[in-house]
Length: 439
Image (cartoon, helix red, strand yellow):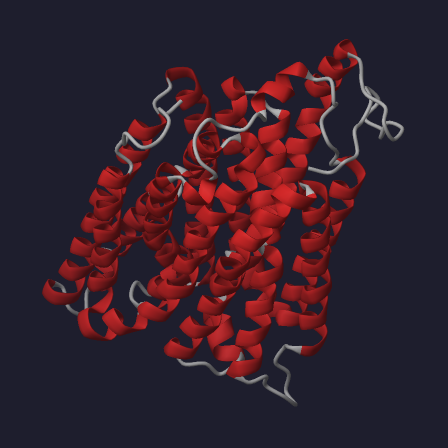
C-alpha cells in the first residue's frame, strides 16, 4: 500500500512516525469505513461504465450504425481491455501500493472518458467507425482495470479476518450498484441527449471518486498489531504459483460467463425477442443489480459467521444452472410452440431472466474473500488481479460469441450455454488438498 501512515485524526503522520497502539485501534475503528466507502465508490463508477455502456446496446447499435456482430466486438473489447490490464495492475498494486495505483488508474479513466465525450460520439455530421469506437472502449478497459485489485487490497489491509467477507461483499455490491444506476440512467440519457452526455456523466463520476481516494485512502497505522498479523505472508506459495489460487480464480472466471451474457445482451434479448420497451428493459436490468447487491451483503455476513464460503459458491453455481435452464426452456416454448404469441410468456421470461441474473451475480464478495485469504492480504492485489483478468476475458469473449449461437440456435441456445458454464464451475469450487482450508 501507500507509504503514508496516518494518525487518529486520519491525517498523514510525519515521515518515520508511528501510531501508538491505542491510537492505531481508534483509527482502525473509524477510518476503515471510509476506506471501504472509497472502494465502493471506485468500483461503482467503473461498474457504471462496463455494465452501463452495454445497457445502452440498442442505442449504440443504432447511433453508431452497428450490426449485432460489430456491437458484440465493441463491447467485447471493453472487457478485453480490463482482462489484459488486471494482472499487471494487481502486480503493480502489491509493489507500489493501492493508493498510487487507484489514483493513477481512476484519474486516467476520468480523463479518457472526457476525451470520448468530446471526440468519439455520433453526430449528424459524423458517425465514428467501429474501429475507433472499439479502440476507445479497449483503452477504457485498460485504464479501468486498476480499480478492482487496488481497492480490494486496501480493504484486506484495513479489515480483520472475521469481518473481511462482509467488507469485501459490501465492496462487491458496488458492481451491481453501479451497474443498476447505469442501467436506469444511461439508456434514457443516450436516447434523449446522446453519448456525449453518457460518457461525460461517467467521466464526472470517476473524477469525484478519484478525489475521495486522494483525500482518504492511506496506509493503516504501523503499530496496529491486528493489521500486522492480518497482512502477514501466507505459508503457501506466491499467488501465481499456488494451484489453489488458480483453481478459485478459474471458477470465478467460468461463473462470470453467464453473468456477462445477462449484462451485455439482456437488453437486446428483451427488446428483440420479448418485445419490451426501454422502461421495462431498464427496470429489469436494475432489478438484477439491486437483487445481486442485497445478496452480496447478506452472503458476506452469512459466510463470515458460518465459515462455509465454498459451500455457498457451489450453491450459487447450482441455482444458476437451474435458472438458466428454465429460462432456455421458456424461450424454446415461446419460439417453437407458441409462435407469434411470445407476449403470452413475456412476463415469465422477464421474471426468470431477473432471477437467473441475481443467482449468477450474488457470489462475488464471498469468492474474492476466499481467493484473497488463500493468497494472503499482502499479496491480494496479485490474486485479485489474476481472477479479474479471467473475469474480463469473459467480458471479451461472451459478447463476441453470442451472435453465433444466436443465429444457429436462437436465444434458447444462448441461455442453455450459460447454464452449461454454471455446471462446469460447480465442481471446481470443491475444496482441494493443495490449498488452505476455506474460512
